[in-house]
Each structure stands twice: as C-alpha cells, then as structure tokens.
Amino acid sequence: MLKNNYHTHTSRCHHAVDEDEAYVLEAIRAGIETLGFSDHIPFLNGPESRIRMDISEMNGYLESIRYLRDKYADQIRILVGFEAEYIDDEIPFYQSLLNENKVDYLIFGNHLYEGYETSSQRIENAAQLQQYVDRAIAGMKSGLFQYLAHPDLFMVNIKDFDENCVKAAEQLCQAALDLDMPIEFNCEGLRDHLNGHIFKNGTTLAYPHPQFWKIAAKMKNKVILGADAHASTAVNDEAIKEAIRQTKEFNLNMIDHLEI
Image (cartoon, rainbow, N blue to C red; front, side, top):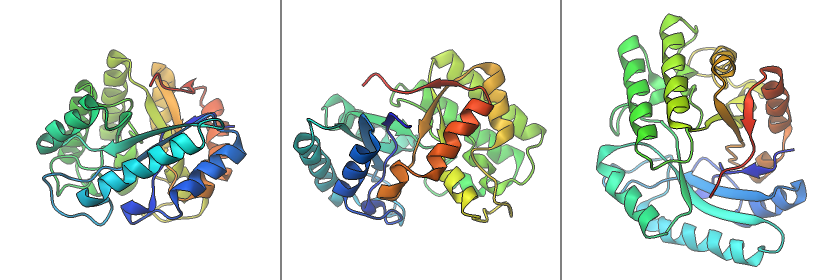
C-alpha cells in the first residue's frame, strides 16, 4: 500500500481529470495517510501553456485544497504544493510561495532542460541530455524542492540506454546522494507502460527505466514512490501495486514519507 503520496494533479493542468475532492475520497478509501497535491505550477513570467494552470487559477487551487484539508482533517493529512521546473525567471516566484507559506512544498519536475521552450521529452542528443542533467543538478542544489520527480524522464525520446544515459544516471544519482535528496520512482510512466502507451522513443518503455533504477539501487539512493495521479483512481491502482513490486525487485532504498 502507498502510505503517503506527494504527487497529485488536478484538472487545472488540462491533462488530468476529476474534481479535487474525488482524489481525497479515493485516498481515504485506500488508507493513505498523507495526500499532497502538487499540480503543475503556473508560470509567472513564461508563455501560456497547455499543460499547466494559468496564474489566474492559482488562488482557486490553493483555496480548494485548503478547504479539503480542513474538511477531512480527522481522516487524512492534506498538503498543497506544486510540481515545478527550475527556470531562472521563476525562482523568485517559487521563493515567495515558500517564504510566505502559501504552499507546503515543491517537488522538482525537470520537464524543461534549458528554458521555457525546451522539452525534456524531446531530448535528441548527448549535448541536450547533459543540459538536462545540469539543470536537474542546479535545481536540486537550489534548496527549493523536496525531491526530484521522475529523474529518468529523459528516456521518453531515447530508445537505447547507452553510455550517455549511464553517465546521466550516475551524475543525477550522485548529486542526489550528495544532497541527501530523494528521487522518485514514478507511477505515471509505469501506468502508461502497463496501458501499452507508445512513447516518443517508439517503445512502451520510457520511465521508470530498469537500467536507471539498477544504477540507483547500486548507489543506494533514497527513493520515494510517486503516484503522479492525473485521475482520482490513480492514487490506488495497478500501477502503484506494480511499482511497489518493482521497487522491491530492484532492492531500492525506499522511504515512505517526507518531513513537511
């Protein structure tokens, strides 16, 4: 069973479904102790996006989750945060959210490897992969984030886990070790794999990638499971059960909660 999940989206990101309360009720039914909402953060300075809420929706999001936190306080612990990229122009915005206690936490989703227009799911060469790694390490060092979500996201557009991918994995894992930061075994990529989704790399396998997690196991990284729920049923589905099985098979150094 997944005891605590800090990676939950809402319909405001335009690629998730269900009302906020539906996620809470499903989590309660599943026996989850802490449900953290971390929808994709709106850009304060960047372009409009089809995969994140608009800045005008942010206060409504925060108010909705806080209302649910109070309503179900005797049944489940609810936190509110964001999944955010490490973008230079957005860092003061992130700092204000944390310093003014507008959010409980941020998790690091490195979807953009170098600026607003560079998707980590479209990495095509070693130079771009190194940019992804460098951006991830800079973000981890910033102190803004609780953990690095789906660190192996770079495999979405890469078919073979070659020597460049090995190097990238080792660099990411070493940085996380040095900073004592957990990395996330992501259930959404596994959910897509189980559903037969074809990724940009032409296969049903992108992340969580076995070769990445063999390296993380060898290096003894702290690993946390993230549902990455884009539907209420995804807080307690077959992907989570399979993820738990795989993390045991890889003999990963699992943690089950964050100190928030």
